[in-house]
Image (cartoon, rainbow, N blue to C red; front, side, top):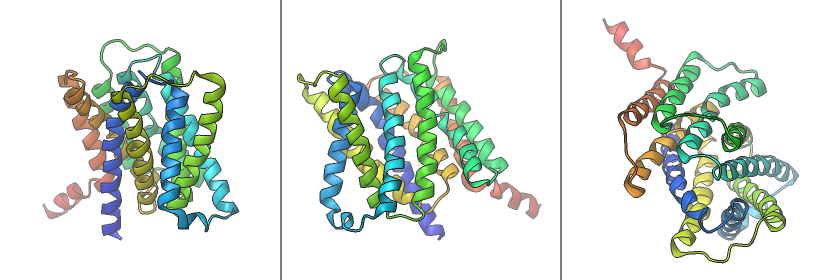
Length: 293
């Protein structure tokens, strides 16, 4: 059981790295396509590839699976739609912080659904991670505009998605759930894009590569890993590990976009990892040390 939990943590850390790189890819993609078409391309690509690779699993789909896929897919679409549209009206650093607030929301959403009160370690680690993300990503003044408001809504939907996946993944085939949520999100994206946005024509190599990255890595591989990993860990624990997305996003921005890494960003990174340690160990190593003295 402990080995499975370790593998789940490693998988979630990989997801965080891939999503961190997704901030850079999304910036590049917005240069060649509008938000809804970006979502239409990434979710359609992921849905088609998943359906081909795991074709045998499609034969096992039942009504309960369809219901779960519709719920998770709808939440997923709403989260990414508000995030991608919001990115047009706010800075990426501000959005990274606001999206990260889902870390604080998850334990309380889970509490509302399961009636299981989050322990002091979950709450403390969430707060530490939130402060860390703020130091890591917010530079200069902070004002709430339409982009910021949309991103707060996006954070709520991402928190809902983590809780929903945590609930359904315990009872359902994670591969079927992943295929269905991509299909639902793809349908919503395509329909709304066709009626609201111009079709992307002038796609550069860099922009095209970014779209493929978002579809293949940030969507297909990342969400498949997340869904499988959540069979062996809690929603709150998942949220804490996934919040390191901001850490990796900042590091990759420094390396790829040549952004400056400040002292506050370094302190923020440390706080995020302290939050992970608190959530992971519940400070058991300190308790053992005290008992030995």
